[in-house]
Structures are given as C-alpha cells and as structure tokens.
Image (cartoon, rainbow, N blue to C red; front, side, top):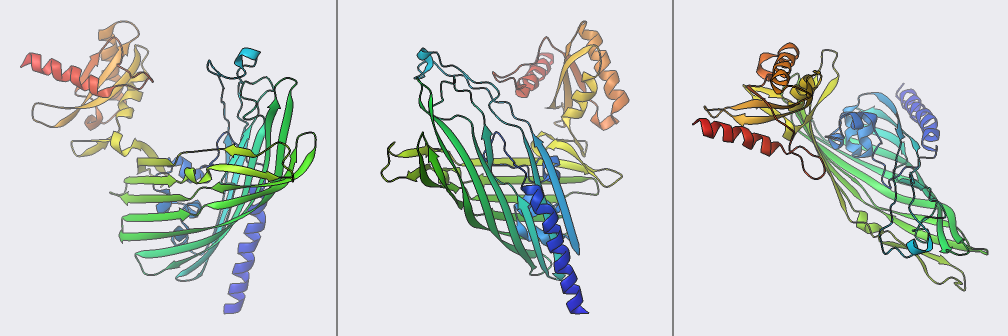
Length: 440
C-alpha cells in the first residue's frame, strides 16, 4: 500500500511537470534582464513577504516554503509584460553629427509563464519542481540609432527547471534545497561600421547550473520569517559569430546571486503586515568576453554590462475580507494608527477625488492639541475652494467610518511637489502647524 502511494505521488508530480515545463518554454522576453514576475500572488502582494511563503510559487525565492502546502499542490502563473522605452542620444554622441538619432519603443512585449508543483512524501518531507524563465531581455533598435555600435536588436532567453526538496525539522523550523538546470539562448546584434552600415551577430545557446536554498522560521503562530538564496549561474553560450564570415564562438554570462528575506505577521483576523528585502548581485556579470577564431579577425569582442548590485524592498499591509482574500492597503510606512485603528490615507484621498468640485487630494497625519495623531485632508478645487472643502467632507462622511474621517480639511491652490512630481506631504503638515501656531 505504501509503495502504491509513493508511485502514484511521483506520477502526479512528473505529470504536473510535463504540463508546466512547456509553459516556461514560450519565449519570455522583456525590456528588463531580471524577470521578477514569477508569481501572480506575489505581484498582488507587491512581493511583500514572498520569501516567507503565502503561495506555492514562493518556492521560487525559498524552497523551504514548500512545507506550508499539505498533500499535493500545483500552481500555474501567467504575466503579460508591456514595456515602452525610448532612447534619446545626448550631445556629444559619436554618431549624432552624422545623422544618426534616437530610437522609440525599443522594448519588446512578453508573455511570461511559470509553474510549480509539490508533493508531501511524508509528514516532514516534501519534493517539488518549479519551471521558470528567470532572466530575459529583448530589444529592437533601428539601424539609424546613434548607439547602433553598442546594441541593435538583441534577445536573451532562459528556461529554468528546479527540482527541490524541503524538510520540516520541527514545528518552527523548515529547510529546503534545489538544483537549477537552466538552458539559455542569445541573439546579439551590434553595428560594425555606420557607413556603409555593417553588422556583427552572435547567436547560440547553452546550459548553466546552480542551486537554491532556504529556511523558514515560525517563532509564533502569527509570524513567519523566510530567507532564500538563488545561486549565481555561469550561463554558457556556444554558437556562431557572423560578420560576413561565420566563426564558431562562445561566451559566458555570469548571472547574479539573489538573496531574499521575507516576513509575514498577522495582527488579527483582518490585518497582516508583510515585508521583503532582496539583494541581487548584478555586479557579478561584469564584462562578457566573446571567444572566437583563430585568428580573431575583429579583435577582442566584449559585452560590457558593468551593472551595479540592486536592492528591492517592499513593506505592505493587507486586510482579509469576508471571503478570505487579502486586500492590499498600502505600504506599512504609509499606514497610520488613529484612535487605535489602522488607516490608509489613500482611502480619504480616493473618496474626496471622486467629487466633481475636487481636483486633487492628499492626506497627512498631524498631532492635535492633546498630542494625538489625527488626519488632515488637503484638496485643490476645480472652482470654488469652500465648495471643494464641503464636497470632500461630505464624500468622507458617506464613504468612511467615523474613525477614518479627517479632523481638518483645507483647500489650497496646489499641492507641493518634488521635481519628479511626488507630493511633499511634510510641507502640508507644516502648513497646518503654522496655522495652529498663529492661533496660539
């Protein structure tokens, strides 16, 4: 009986892999090198706390999260990526005086799929498989672009399968380990001479291998902390270099390590706070050198990526609705506690902005005379300022419970903004504080 159970479990796991692997084999190009969109649940949560679990797809970041799924589980995800990138050469660009110019909409759209399956072999042991395209890039430049000698239409695609195992050590500690098997394809085009226009093309494919590892710690029934690691992969590309002649060529892309730390804490039946800090070792990629020949007719060819390491941080709060779904309430540093209740300032802004007399709205916390944190709502008017204040007050009274309504509403000519258009909320707070000081 036990043997039949094991055999059927393996069959189900491999069958799910057979379904999900072709999903990852669709060309997943995007106007970015690292493709974060590996989980639709993660995207809905702004990737907050994703390394601590919350969905089967969390195993992409941390294989130890498989222990959160009982029995057999399967998850498929699909994401459309629509990029729009314009290139504008600056004065001093080498080819600008020779009539070469900018390029519009150089990023290519993508349809990205990923799949996950896991099977609980025993009370404390899980095996799983994930299929992804973790890195991808596709661009399209016209031959008249001033940067043609650095890049023309190029693409990089990766297809990754990661079999994994996870072990629950005890009720509060789980660990996981996986092996990455990655196939990569590259098609890189550069300008060789501008007049007459000639080109050099490198195309090829190859394999790379790496690891994933992770741990989850559950210090209490309402808190989970996860740390996950995806190792760097030395992605081999073997193919041809074409420049009128064709030469066998190869290169290696040193793809980055990724370390993710996530936390999920449930305050009560409605409120959950989640956070993520993630480091990507982009500097590892350095410069990729193309080896070809002999003899090397064009001299050394290098692809100088020279990326800097990157950080991603997400701190978000959610409430659970009556159906059990999580509803995003904003970043944790944007939420305010007023009269013992969590309030998202955006709720007030959204309610007021629906009024015809209100052009824009911004909400900020301000201390009252008793030193308690209260809400102040600033609005800009489409017409009469007094009418805008009355309309905003009526909107908040209709749409929000009493503890979420603003104590002060002020109409101003315009909201103060930074050079990039972000509202300077501290200046709004200072406006009201100056008003209070004059009254005193």
